[in-house]
Image (cartoon, rainbow, N blue to C red):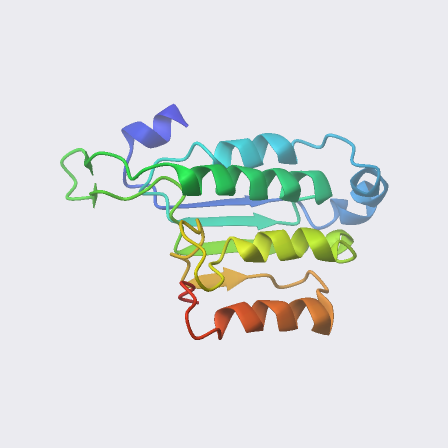
Length: 170
């Protein structure tokens, strides 16, 4: 994280688990064995404000998604930081809040699909109508591919996106 604060040219971060390990890790994921995903989620909560694109591909389990929701809720309550400037590269993040993502991908985590309430709490971060300080209201793109979410969960997401007074910009 310290290196990213010294190198403001880094705008995107992606974490990916080897797809061949999915079957090997399936039992560990279901049993919530600590596989390092919690550390990656904690890292996401301390990224510099110019990191605006974040992807978790085949990384998250139920516990780490719950932690990500909690971390994003916390960063959404923080005030916008003071001006932050790049180091001579012409890169700036003036007045940007930490955790203000343009792109967020939570991909290939089908083992979380049965946890509807967890997905709903994640979707609440997008900005339901008249809910102030939604941390993911800045999102322009959300990639939830490979999660087998089903019609009911997708319908809830579409309802949030298409609300008349929503802050969501997807």
